[in-house]
Structures are given as structure tokens and as C-alpha cells.
Amino acid sequence: MTWETKVNVSKIFELRCKTTCYFGLGAIKKMEEISANLIKMNINKVVVITDKIVPEVTGAWNVIESAFKNYNIEWLIYDETLPNPTVEQIDKATKFAKDFNAGAVLGLGGGSPIDVAKSVSVLLEYPEKTAQELYEMNFIPEKAKPIVAINTTHGTGTEVNRFAVASIVEKGYKPAIAYECIYPLFSIDDPNLMLTLPQNQTRFTAIDAVNHVTEAATTLLASPYSIHLAKETIKLVAKYLPQAIVYPEDTTARYYLLFASTIAGIAFDNALLHLTHALEHPLSALKPDLAHGLGLAILLPAVIKHIYPACSEVLASIYKPIVPFLEGIPGEAEIAAAYIEKWLFDIGITQKLKDLGFNENDIEKLTDLAMNTPSLDTLLKMAPIPVTKKIIEQIYKDSMYAIQ
Image: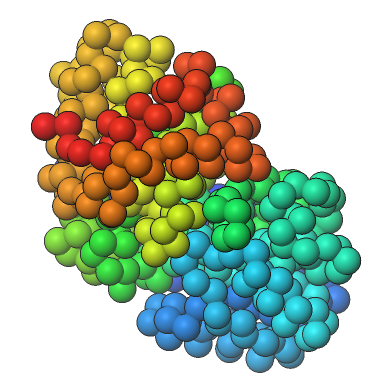
């Protein structure tokens, strides 16, 4: 019996970071309180950014709609968000919101709808700008419309941080932005909204959280805070991900996977990211159907192998729930990488880059995108080792095939 089993998962608590996040089973009911706050801010028109599946499958929309009606808030739904959204999609959503004269933006879904909502919130305040200008960092926004984030996956962390991602397809870019003005004003993390997550999405989103903290614990900005959050995140994912895969409606498992994801989002909001995310973005930029978490999982063992000698003590500590015999010495790098890959295989993530259709002829293009996509150079500079073209090429090469 562990302390986690004693927690009342139906008790809603407020997770205060820059965002006020309502967390726990039934937290979606906080839409009443959020709606009341919007009215106090003289906001009575909200554009909802989502996709065609989430509103009905999760059951969230009925609660949101009821709250809006109770407070006489008008809404319009943009439901054309796709995985790995593009700047063209964002411009389309922005025009939709602008024509409606929206005073706030609500993102309902996983990382893609919420990131689009963040982007739209900026462009509503800068009507002369485009999404491509935003993501090529041609201007630095200082204001945005209020954002409400209703999260439906346990991986992204975007509901509690200042990051958003979109693709510029014509250039093969998938940059990230990070601005103070795109912290959500309110967010909701309700594990009930994740009970219908497909098995693979359950895996991939949880591994996204693992990558967030692996990087946040080892960047040049890492601190005891980010390392502590990393230890807790990996412990919870290692314990509860297998349970959620076998028993998808286990609310305790979903609760702690979601908590892990949320604190992971806070961790990298404080300490940033580095190699795994910088090298994954070119993968899903070139193959938009690639799940972000799967791309990260494929790269993770190779990244661990290359950075382990520089931060072996930290990595041994945070990965103890998965590889308990690590002693934190540089010479363990290949062993650590092999056992982390074995763990990924054991939970059902067995693909490598070759299985996705990549080959060694693609490495030069991927490396060029990792080094030249706007914002990714910043992540590469945060790595605990000096990142050269040769290292990037080797990580991609090492990720083509299984270690074992």
C-alpha cells in the first residue's frame, strides 16, 4: 500500500503556476467558475478550438456548453485542428475567431488544439501579422487574448506553460514559440477526459512527459526543482502507464499519468528542453502523421547514450524506477540506453526510424532542419554536451535500428 492510494482523486485542487489549473476527477465542472470569471472580465464571446472527435468522445463539450449558456456566453466552434497543425491552419482559425469578434480563446483537446488556441490568441491582438511570421519569430508578441485550456491527454503539458508548436510545411520547419503572454489564464486537467484515449495515444503521450523531464533535468538551466519533478514524473509513469494500457478506465492510473504530465510541463517551462525535442521536430515536420510522442520514444535511447557521460548522476537518479541498478558513472551510457529502449519495447513501443520509412539517406536533411529550424538552435544550445553536426547525425543514425 502506497500513499498514492490514500489520495482522494475526486478532490479538486488548484495547481498554481503561471496558470491556475483545476486538477482532479470532475474538474471539468470548474467551467462554471471559469465562465463567471470571463463575464467579470467583460468577455461574452469565446471561440473554441478543437477537432472533430474530442468534444463528443470525452463528454467535455456538454459541460462547457452548459456553463456558457448559464452565463450567456456566445461561442463558435472551430473543429478543423489536425495533429501537427500548420501555420495555414492557424491563419484559418484566426480569421474564424476574428470574424466572430472573440474576446477569449478556449482550446479543447491535446497539444494541437491548445497550441492552435494559443497562437490564435496572439494573432487576434496582432491582426496585421500571420502565423508564419509568429513562428519564424519575425515579431515578439507582448499580448494575447485570454486563453482557457481544457486538456484531454496526459503528455503535452501545454495547459500549464508558455510553449506552442506549429509546422511551416513549405520549409519543413516545426518551430516552437515561448512567450509570457500565452500562458493559459485557466486550465482544466480532468482524468475523466482521458478514459477514452486509444492505447497507442496513451503510450505516446506518457512518453512525451518522460522526454520533457529527461531534458528538463539535464539542460544547462536544470535545477534541483526540475530534477525533483523529473524523478517524480518518471516514477509515476513507470508505475501507472502499464496499468492504464491494460485497464484504460482505471481513474487512479489516469490521474497519476496526468499529474506526471502536468508537473513535467512545469519542469520544462522552468528549465527548457534540448536534444530529443530538437531532433524530433524535423521528423514530424516531414511526416505530419507521425505522433510526436512516438518520434521522441524512438530518439530517446540514442540521446541518453550521448548525454549520459555528462550527467550520469542525474540520469541514474531519475531513471531508477526503470533501470534500478545504474550507479551514475559515465561508463554506463550504453547500458542505460539499452535498458531504456528495452523498457519502451516492453510497454509496446517497438518502432525505430527505419520502421517509419526513414533511411540513412534522410539523415543529412533531418540534421539540416534540426540545426536551421527557427527556435531549435536554442534547444540545441541547452544540451549538456556541445552539439555538433556530427553528434546530431549520429543520434539519427543510432535511432534507425534497435540497439539490441
